[in-house]
Length: 391
Image (cartoon, rainbow, N blue to C red; front, side, top):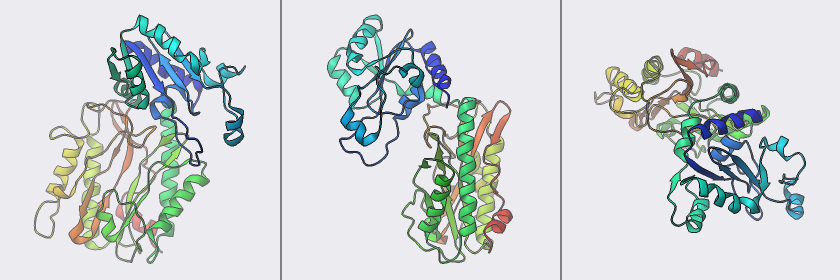
């Protein structure tokens, strides 16, 4: 992601900012052994991945504060950047970079000229409240979320790349799928494909649910053996260059849906197609009226029954989708869809009594004219999926 992208984001924020916005980068443990991602809002505005930094933004200025070099620490984690470095402006993309100990001095100056304060709810905010007990500190998440919800061309390219890698991983899992294979073996194929394509890894814990596990929405144990005649719900996507995707397909072990499995699958697919066709600026993802969730549920209720003759909409137990971006469940604020948003469309029917769960999930870009399917290259039709997994 070019540094100009982050400069543009800060400039957009400053246009509507009516106070002082303060963000803290992630903190670092004494002896960290696991990689930690940057705090998403901090990364969105700075592109900075190193821990310990702070950001101060007002309508008229933006300052990045960096820790000093720590020679002992850098023996363990590698060389870090500091405000004293000669190339710090080129590396960070900030014209004003200062040592971390200057933060409170600059904050006092900013507060002298601005009444409102914005910060994220965290230990950092608690410290600010103790330092400035007579200041009301508002949540910084909503004003940043308004920016994050509409994706720039650079962000769309990053999401598309994560999506393309995710589609390749699903194809690899289908190719390996066979009776007697364990769910974690399919998970291994998915994650290997992500890493082989240069991505950081998973955007979220992979869901590989076979048989009865296909009916569990957020199943992630992935330790059951898949047997012939069952369906497997694979909900898995990559994170590449900091951006996520979110893809789900349901496939038959052995390469053939039963008549009932196909019936349920085609109803879910029909509901998804109805929701995608209706996706446009002005409509909401969820809600009792004028929402894509209601459109999908109404479709299910109008097509097919359970074993007791009841409509199938009650087996759709979650919303139709969510924002996608830096996080798989990306920042959002309540409101209708707008052009430039990237969201999932993921209807599902889960019937524990029949050991049948079907979910189909794709990523779409909302445009002025409707929806563009970013994951169109991966089959959704049942015949095509059967061909892909048949041995």
